[in-house]
Amino acid sequence: MKLAAFDLDGTIYFDGHMPEDVPEAIAGWRAAGNLAVVATGKSPYSARRALEPFGVDFDYYLLCNGTVITDGSYELLYESHVPPEVVRAVYERVRDIPKLDLYCTRLEAPDGHLVRNVGGVHNPIISEPVPVAPERIEKEAFPLVAAWTPGNPELQKEIAQWVTDRFPVGTAMNRNFFDITPPGHDKGFALTWLLRLLEVERSEIELITFGDGHNDLPMHALADVSLTFPWAQPDIQEACTAVVDSAVKGLIDYGT
Image (cartoon, rainbow, N blue to C red; front, side, top):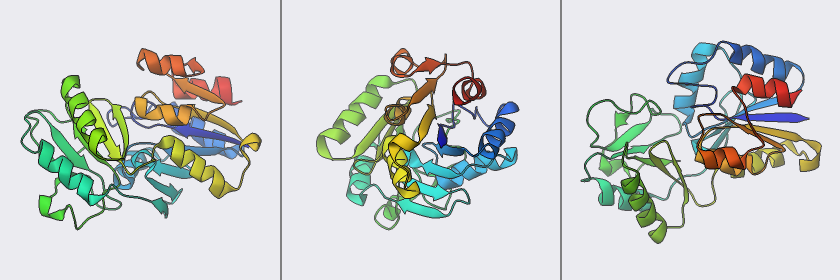
């Protein structure tokens, strides 16, 4: 059995668009008896909204950086949440910081923002978030919370250090985001969980991963073949089996 795990943004989905050859390539991969899986930081709501216009189907979705797992119909198989006391503490720490947004993902509702202090054009990853009142922090479940600090890597690192010094959480830094997940959760965790669900021995499956970001490294580390792209950072390229021009080319060259 072969399983291909695809990141979305910067891998097969680019600022609201998908290359025309991607749906056909993934459909052909699945028709050959292989599994195709999405592994993304996007929430269920956001991933579904992004993918449905292109008519592309997957067997499983590993969402919110491995915190939410669904089947191909978006039926929930697994979920976890950032502890509310962590969300509250982060909100209080960052709410008055200029040029910082604090986003929160949810299982079914649109993505939200607890803090929105970045003026002008907003990020293309979390589109059209709705405001979430801070009073909702202890009343809702957030699988992933993300601080966005565009053009300010030092602030990103400062917030990351503050959080990790105080709380045992999962973290990832990518595309001006600092993501916070429940402890032990990342894309590698989700892939491992999925293999257990499938009741397939690791030696019986060929795992191919596609991704351009630092949050893809945990799943790349599990792969038989890990593929990234020329626009990925040098350390990501060094961690992968190969650098390919596109996901479709990688699927053809390394998946067949």
